[in-house]
Length: 397
Image (cartoon, rainbow, N blue to C red; front, side):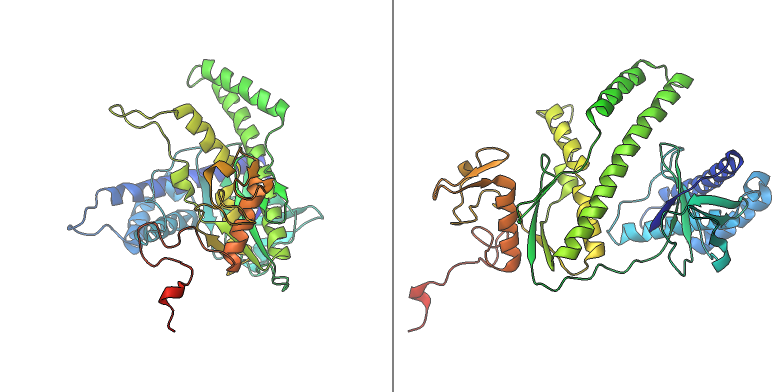
């Protein structure tokens, strides 16, 4: 998706918000219909049946008829694609949409004249029932665009994203392999010795965020003051997210251009960031510490970095079993937990080699991808074939 910043006028913002409301209303109706479906009974209505129901609803309700049929039908189309992804076990079940969260709608059947450039830094896109809306021309719009999506984030910013599949980044052809070790203190450590840090809020911004959060805790629910404080917090968090996304885009492009093979740990981030609160009967331990670790993992952008690498370098990203990569000495291959003295220091208890712990782990990941090493004690954790050195006594004479 090629995303651009929209610049609607106040009147256009109202019309775009109405489109978002119609799309959210239709989506929630579809969710409610499917919520009553149970296995063994008549199946829930499909896309064609729900489109017929939408036509009847538009004939009965003038406020719905005043909206765009394209926006409302595409909300149903998006919902059925989400259900297909759920049954395909690639995504979670689609849920309710709330006002202010996941706001947006999609427009299809875009004609060549519906998007054009008006000046050096501005372009226009034609939106049904709204008219021509300007956006910031930060780069050229891809050719042959057939659809686009307009969204509004929590900070109140509007964006337009044109659907286009970009060409992958070509491999350099040098045969070089790089290992990437992801962490919290160091977002990404490369086997080349580079330590990369995902940008965050500056100290002054962090202080302002804390003060705003305290104001929010004291504000009365539903008051204008609370809404103002929430908007200010959303703007700060959006600024942090933009910096993180920009860093991920630049880092993934740089890795795809410099290396033929990119080896990275195969981590289940959703399980690693699960809450430790537990239940009332069995409450968890160190809940606040675990919550801080979860925030650190998510702020480092682990998942998005791998996703963008797979987009830009398809077939060149290898996911490696992370077991013992941080406890193995890259020089002598000795495995010991005590070798990892701290977050940053690795001192092998066997050979005495000293190195940065994250870089040492990245080198182990690189060697595994290059076929120079195997996971400790080999084989999957639940049994199966084991990687072992050839035994002379078992070799034929």
